[in-house]
Length: 101
Image (cartoon, rainbow, N blue to C red; front, side):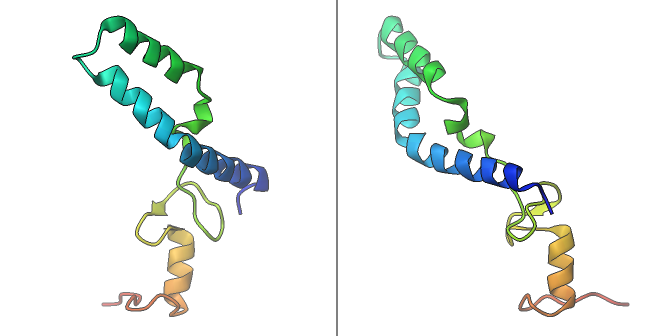
């Protein structure tokens, strides 16, 4: 089980990223637009730099929904490999069986 503080910090980052997303998207569009004057584009870059870092989507860490484990994460199930194997062995994931040959 991961530390509660790490899990909560990640949740806080996800919430902040969701709130900041429209503003970041608009500023990035201005900064990338080659038809605008360079001064206006530079101002957009400065405003982006002033925004909180945790508002960026890339700062969110994929974590297991059950344990909070940050490594060996399966996106399809939103679980870590350890949890996925336990649930599959118990038959709690439909259509997944343990292989044997």
